[in-house]
Image (cartoon, rainbow, N blue to C red; front, side, top):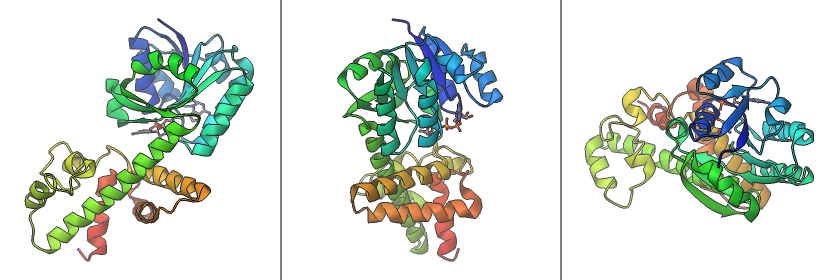
Length: 296
Ligand code: NAD
C-alpha cells in the first residue's frame, strides 16, 4: 500500500533511499539543508519541501538519514508538534545507542510509533535497494515499518527493542574495523616475509583467516578485482565513517561496562590514519599507513 512519506536527510545514502521509495510507488516529500542534495533527489521524483515541518505535515511515515545522534534528536524534537498521532518515525542513521533510545522516547511522547533502523550496504546498496536493515523497536512499529523498509532492503533483521538496531550496527562495525586492521597487518607482515599477496590470499581466504575484510574488501590490489585497493582506495567505506562507528562502539562499551580492547586499538589506529589526512580514503587504505609505520 502506498504511503505518504517524509524523508529528512537526502545525502549520499538518504537521496538514493528516498528514490527507491518513490520507485516503489510511495509519495515522498523530502528535506535537506543542502540545496544540492535536494536538487538531486527532486530529479528522482522526490517532492522537496521548504522546511522539515512542511515535509512531515500529513505524513504517515517519517524517515531520517542524518549524520549523528544530535541531528536526529534535533529533527525529531522539531517535528514532534507537526506530526499526526500514530505516525511512524524511522531513523536509519548510524547513531549512538543512548540517542537512539532518547529518540524513541520523543516519539512516544508525540503518540507516534518508532524504529531505529541503521543500515549496512553503503551507497551502492542504497542505490540498488539492497541494504541490510538492523531494526529495534516495538512490535507494532515493526509490523508497519516492514513494508516501507522492503522497498530499500535486501534483508531486514529484527534485533529487539528500542536501540537494539543501533547496538547491532556498532557491534558489527567493531568486528569490521578489527578484522580489517588484522588483514592489513597480515599482508604487511607477509610482504616483509617475502610472501606474495596472491599466495596469502589463496591460503587465508580458504582457511581460518577468512573474513569479509579479506574476501570482499581485500586491502591489496589483485586478488579481489572489485575491492577499493584496485581503484586507488577510493571509498567504498571511508575511513572517517569507520572511525565514527568505532568511536560509537567505544562510547557504548564505556557506558555498558564492556571490555573491548581490540575495538579500542582499532579506533586508535583509525584515528591516527584519519589525522594523517586519510579520512576520505577507503578504510582498507589503512594498509599503506601500516606499511609506513613498518618502515616502508
Ligand atoms: P551525508 O553527509 O551524505 O548525508 C547527510 C545529510 O543530512 C546531508 O545531506 C546534510 O545536509 C543533511 N542534514 C544534516 N542535518 C540536517 C537537518 N537538520 N535537516 C535536514 N538535513 C540535514 O551522509 P551519508 O553518507 O548519507 O550518511 C548518513 C548516515 O548514514 C550517517 O549516520 C552514516 O554514518 C550512515 N551510513 C553511511 C554509509 C555510507 O556508506 N555513506 C553506510 C551506512 C551508514
